[in-house]
Image (tube, helix red, strand yellow):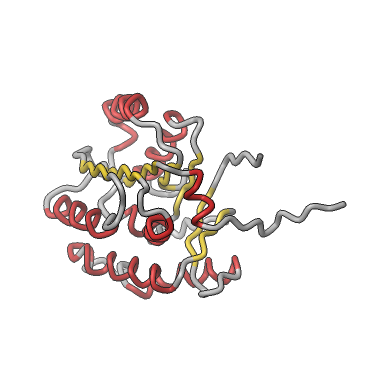
Length: 223
């Protein structure tokens, strides 16, 4: 008898029952919000006692203040939270040996159940480096790699979807646009851009709200 797994569905509450600690990693100050902000909001809504480590690896100047305020906004209602804003050199991640040492230390310090990080196929060198170091450091965790729209046109074909309730999608979009005024000069940094990607992934996964976030997952064990 054939077992159909093409649209296997696991609810946020079910996932939350297995996940007690989440590590959210962003190379830049708005990466987490853009890539997986809705998923974080939905998980926290279903599991308010969730522990969250929120790490931004580079946020020069006013971007650091934006990153801190945004993390506080998205993590409202979480259990224990630890927010770190680091100061690695933007656009030079592959050439910073100290970044590897930092990840080694992080791996000794925390043991998350779920890691949310950029996709390894991302065209931005900082995003790729973070993803590669996550793969080296967290080998026994569920790792979901999020996507970030940009000029490079590097969106791939993800295999994992999170259906968002409309209220979580709207909260995510508002958080991005209101939380990072320094980025409004960029032509792609608009509500329409981020909403379009949510809508596209919603169509692909038949989300009831029509909105979804998507991830790449290289390894997943089904028990």
